[in-house]
Amino acid sequence: MADAADSTICGGSPSARRSGSDSLQITRKFSAARQRVWLAWTQPDAIVRWLGPSDWPAVEVTAEVRAGGAWRACLRSRNDDRLLWQSGRYLIVEPPERLEFTFAWEGSSHEDGPGVETRVAVILEPTAAGGTLMRFSQTGLVSRESAAGHSKGWESTFERLAQLLRQQDGY
Image (cartoon, rainbow, N blue to C red; front, side):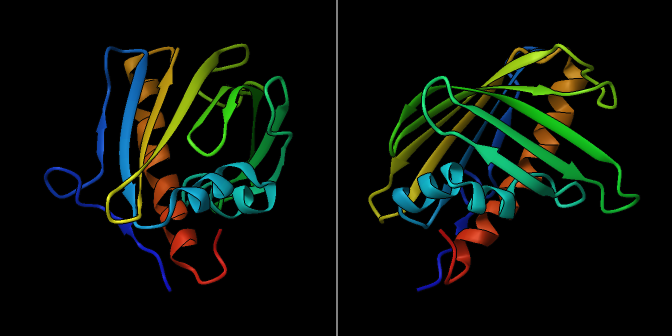
């Protein structure tokens, strides 16, 4: 059975909005069961298959998914092989419904620069049709421009997640 992302959330597309200049919220519905979406968020061999926008896909992911555990990912530009590293710590892990972690870019090659730590929350709710409603938020961004850039990046990333969940061997 192939699962698909449902991009019709109250009006025809995934919902993204920024609440203030330093945060964003994205709501996305997937036809995949909540457990499959949870595994895609928490299994390193699955995360590497969808993390990162289409033009900056992940090439390496490590994740110790437990409160206090560390995660780290490397994204590589499809245009010129530049690398962007990101990392953080898991704060809340409540399978299969809630995942919260810190998120920071490493080095100085990202617009947010080093030392800027944001907080990501992912809430997964089962739908009546057997799918999953994902509520995603990221707070602590440095500017409206940063929030807009992260929103664009996460939307592309979630398209890649939807593709993974549609695959027969997806998580």
